[in-house]
Length: 257
Image (cartoon, rainbow, N blue to C red; front, top):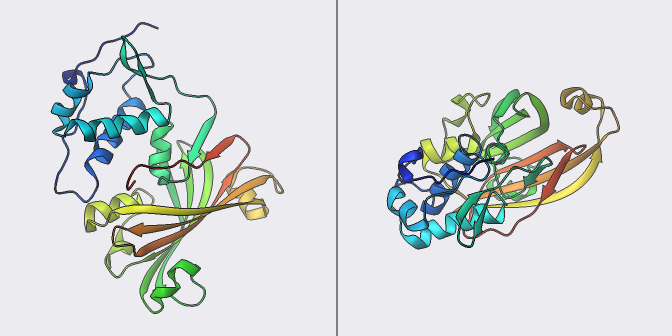
């Protein structure tokens, strides 16, 4: 495959928004991930770091942080004498547990899609996930979704969101919208930490039917709690993923994600 030396004018660069609650390096990283999952090809050579920093309107340190996260995920590689090169995608798909589902799918070059199975408002009570019990009596939104990567069912997610700071959240169409995107875009609530715990299970009849696997097939159960920059938990999710051909990883992050 022939190499292309790219320049910033060749790329659909989104200049960062300094007023956004999303960290600058994360805005840059997200934009580059979209390109790598779309128009960029393996062996493409990215513009020099300083040229990219100027195009995005960020400092060199911010640019370096964004690129280092892509290197850590083996999406790009720095090669002496050649620059920063786009890597070929791995055949085996990997989930990293410190990311939203939508971002995971974008990293894999897939389009995230959802089918809402159940959506209801209520209040936090004794049946809520333990990390949210400090918010007893607070209004909440409970959302159950079947999650797809392109047309393939990948997981079932049941989410409880405290909606004190986002009271109109139940009005959004989560067949189409990303929960975290809505929180950041509409309410300027940035998720800065996601804590997770993993366990194993086997598929019951309903899970097997929805995920298009057999009853008794292995599943990975991931329980996550998302925190705002204030340290306050805003949502807790139990995700059940089919484990037949997906690989799950935990990665140390640099700052908020």
